Length: 120
Image (cartoon, rainbow, N blue to C red):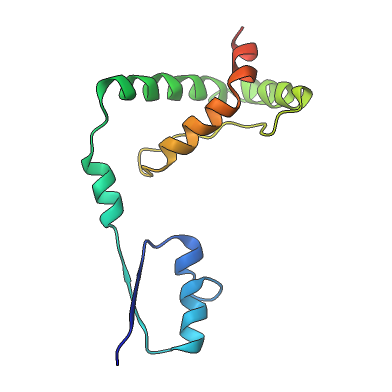
C-alpha cells in the first residue's frame, strides 16, 4: 500500500529533519510528499470588496508610516513599552502572503490606543 501526504508547505510541516515531513520519514521512509496550494489560489481568487480594500490600504499606510522610519519605530516601541502593551511592534503586510492581511489588521487593532496616541 502506497501512502502520500499533502501539506501547504509551512515550515513546521515541510522541514526535512525537524518538521512533520522529517518525523514521518523516520517511521515510514517510502511515503511520498506533495505540496498543496489550493487554499492560496482560492484566497487569491476572491477579490476584496471596495470598502474592505480601502480599510486595508489605510491600515497599511499607518503601519508603513510607523515602520518606514527608524525613529518612528523606536519611538513607537518605547511608547508601547511605557504603556505596558502586549506587543511593541507592528507587522508589515506583504503582497506575497495573503494571510498576512489578517495578522496585520489584528495587531493594528490590538495596538489601536497606542497608535492613536503616537499619531497625535
